[in-house]
Amino acid sequence: MQQPPLFLGLDLSTQQLKASIIDEGENLLYEEYIHFDSDLPHHGTQNGAHYGDREGEVVCPVVVWLEAMDVLFDRLTEKHSVDFGRILAVSGAAQQHGSVYWNAKGVEVLGKLDKSKGLVDQLEGGFSLERAPLWMDSSTTKECRELEEAVGGAQNLADRTGSRAYERFTASQIKRLYDYDRPTYDQTTRISLISSFVASLFLGKVAPIEIADASGMNLMDIIAGNWDQELLKLCGGEELKEKIGEQPVGGGTNLGKVANWWVERYGFNPDCIVAPFTGDNPSSIVSLSSPGDAILSLGTSTTLLVSIPPSPDPPLCTTNSHMLAHPTTPGGHIAMLCYKNGDLARKSVRDKHFDGNWEQFDQSIKSTSSGNAGYLRFYFPMKEIIPDGVIGEFGFKEGKLVEGEGGEFKPSYSRAICETQLLSIKSRLHHILPHSIGHLHRCIVTGGASANETILHLVADVLDLPVYVAATSASATIGG
Image (tube, rainbow, N blue to C red):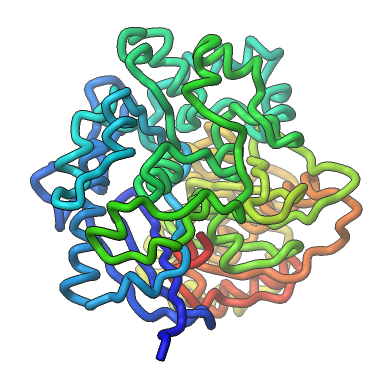
């Protein structure tokens, strides 16, 4: 009797490589992780990265990811006895913005992998840059400002690509290589995002970049969904067009069948389809929501993702938000707001005013009413992204700055931090969304604070949306 098909999803995040295998009913059957620091300690990564000599430089050796793939699939075989012949399709996600630089040798070897050898043994030395820049890199401020100036300012770049120039985005990373290390740039045959790099390993050839992940590069026309030829030339000269490859593809595209190496080494079905890999945030959107939904991640950072259906009036692009193409809905978009001061800021208030006790923190919220008697207090222990560059604490009573900590308002500090975080989201979200889509349908909450019912009630009250808690932690692998 023929066994029902399975589907494989991978997530190459900053600190680990994760595989999830599901059935047709989206039931999770197998899961396995390779944690870079603990499982591959000989590479010397710290939280999945190396910190370079240049100020703000954060990279990861490509061989870490290659070896992680080898170890992961060996574990799935030996530990879980996975029948890879049942897998009908493979896709997944990866940390956004990071880039991989193939040389001619790497592209050639990729197309003729030997089943008797692992990926790391064959592809090591196949990259013009041995260490790939990561999303945490902040070393390209100069290139960002030059890029914005070349197109008439940050807002103009946001209107064209969905975001102003960010150091972690791929455009400034490519521009730095082109401007300061031309020999390495010239040795580069193809440039992949980390997501399309993983897809390439399965295809046995360099895969095209998926449209949602491409919109996190500062290189794609956010409305047309094609590469912006002027921006390509500004960042990498005429030759970047060939290095970046064909136009971005939609998430549902059939890229082809798995390479023979996977069939011969692990027993994959030769008809197994490879679909584009996307970024981790777009993948979570696909896994957890439908157009018109919001996903609020209350983790170390606070991130809001909104799936925007196709609309006659396009969403507004700003210099403190991101607009991405939707991976599976042509003409749809994803609005993204990202705040650095999330859970750590809430914990700092808990520790300072409530003796490190969450029950006291929650009780303070319950004992005060919505609006906090007109008192607002903003907490930015780290330099914030929205608003950009702000650091410190700022209290206001009925619109007037309050010096110190507000005295009689001490019991409301927990409500103050939660309400101000959520009000910042609400005010910006209203500005971004097209008027034609109407009210959002619901808010799906993920992250550590999603277990706190008091905070969930505040989310529902401030955002005026029904709130649901995500049932899975595998949203990136399953969504991909």
